[in-house]
Length: 117
Image 1 (cartoon, rainbow, N blue to C red):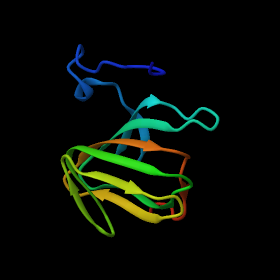
Image 2 (cartoon, helix red, strand yellow):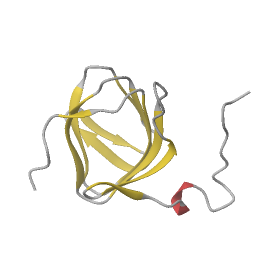
Image 3 (cartoon, rainbow, N blue to C red):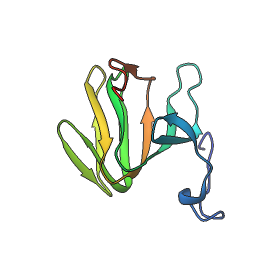
Image 4 (spheres, one colour):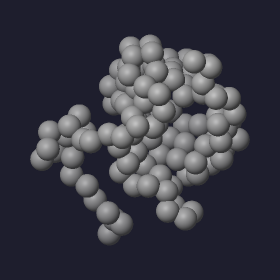
């Protein structure tokens, strides 16, 4: 039996959910916030040109791109792409045209460089 289930279809799906500020140009809708040693799960919505500065993964991170293109130093990931970032890896993330991703973090990341804007 799952811990929790959530149906996104009655309200028009994930596109109509309420988002809150996360970083400049990036908003978040928490599906499951971090709780002790339990992972966090969220939707991140990047505006056109938005970015997250260089950071280190303190646990496994998995991402599914739902809309648009998310990019990092190793490539561009379009709709339907599944990305896995292992514990200890580092990168920065951006989206030229904007995107929405479903993300799960085992642990919060450590920001290594703040935005230079």
